[in-house]
Length: 102
Image 1 (tube, rainbow, N blue to C red):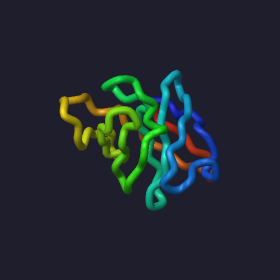
Image 2: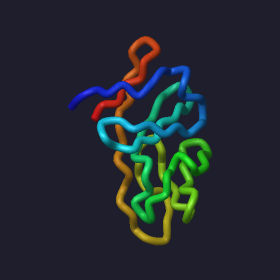
Image 3: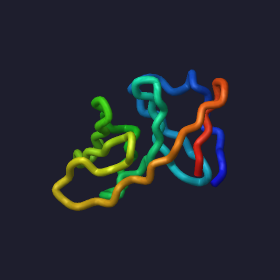
Image 4: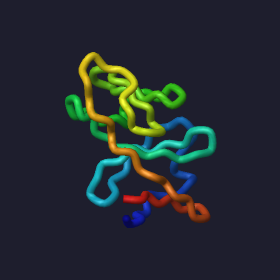
């Protein structure tokens, strides 16, 4: 497992969805209640960019068809079809730098 720099803590705001590319992967990063979370940014249903969706607490809503994901785990919460979970990543904070474990 390797660590990849994804930005500074000041670049990720509470409850906002931020898109980064790390290790050749499209990643969605957010800050909820003082903790950073990261998961895949591309909906595995139809390819929507999830950072364009809405975040309500821990629930991320896909902007195209309304699939709901738990942003802290990448697990599917709701959708009429069974979808695979989105890949979830650990975010490590070192001083004011954010790293993603890939």
